[in-house]
Length: 191
Figure 1 (cartoon, rainbow, N blue to C red):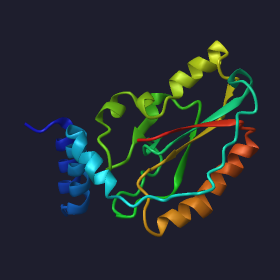
Figure 2: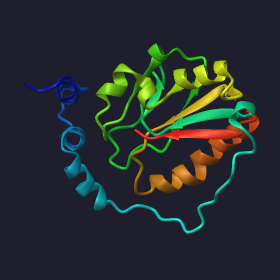
Figure 3: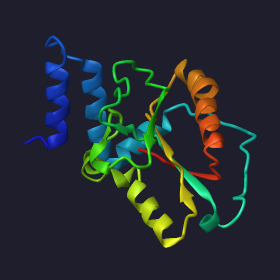
Figure 4: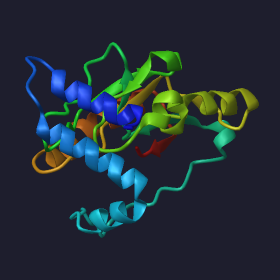
């Protein structure tokens, strides 16, 4: 019997819009489910993906102990507020845009839109990929100085021409907002 994830993506694909089957999304979701169940297959597939390489990756040490710093949170897990526009899942090159998530947002108001990994566990506890409650606890305990008012969600599947948009348009926007908010350090979580 198929699990909830399988039923969910099949239902969405078969009955989306005017009953058109979106085989591309079905394929992506089926592969995500398969790679989750058989990690060795996922590793083999990942080895075949062409990744970007940078020779000049900068290292910036933290400007002090975390207890005195303001932290922001960025995820590539496809997290966003459930009333926001979902990430684009039809474009096979992904969605390079971001969603702002106020740090005051209740976790019940968050959701994930991402077809390229099995997020059924994160759907039950968003903190798996977007640890907002843990970071708030660390602030209350004095382990982190403060949490930024604006946190950010991206969809990690970005390829082709969208990579340029992501690097040259979206990242500078987020960087500018973080500077405006006085962010000292950023925790980045994958999906």
